[in-house]
Amino acid sequence: MTNEVKSLEELRAVAEGFLHEVAQIPSEKRATVVGLSGDLGAGKTAFVKCIADVLGIKETITSPTFILEKVYTIPRGSLLGACFTKLIHIDAYRLHSGSEMRALDWDTITRDPANLIFIEWPEQVTEVMPKETISLSFEYVNESTRKITF
Image (cartoon, rainbow, N blue to C red; front, side, top):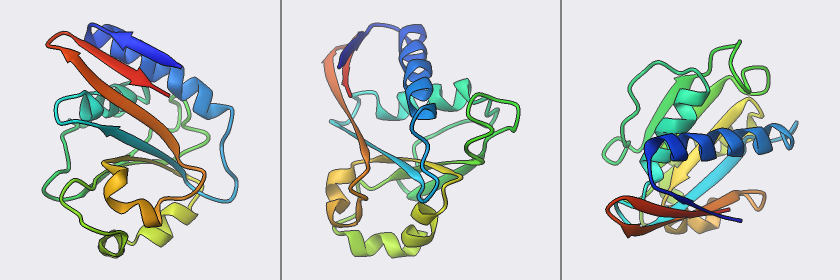
């Protein structure tokens, strides 16, 4: 499925729809991992910001490019608050292999079904990505338009 978005409001609507889909497939054994692929400026971090907004997270969401990982608590009364307790945002852009994910305690965070993990640049660490990873692709069309493919 491909969505073309031309505004933050449309991106938020796509994010909300995506979360409703995720709510239908929660894992009881593992974290839910979502891989976000696309060029710089294609909208990956903006999408995570919209996800956080829909989930009721009040903290400012910024790209974790230099610190690799940011963890946010999902409020209990929010959409998916009953399924997940943490939103984990990872940026693997600067990584060169999956072994570098050990610094993030990757095996532990992916085993916890209460974690909803969004990882930008999953292609940098393909060897450690779970086979159940949900893949989203972001494409820069022009200054005001992005394509998101699920």
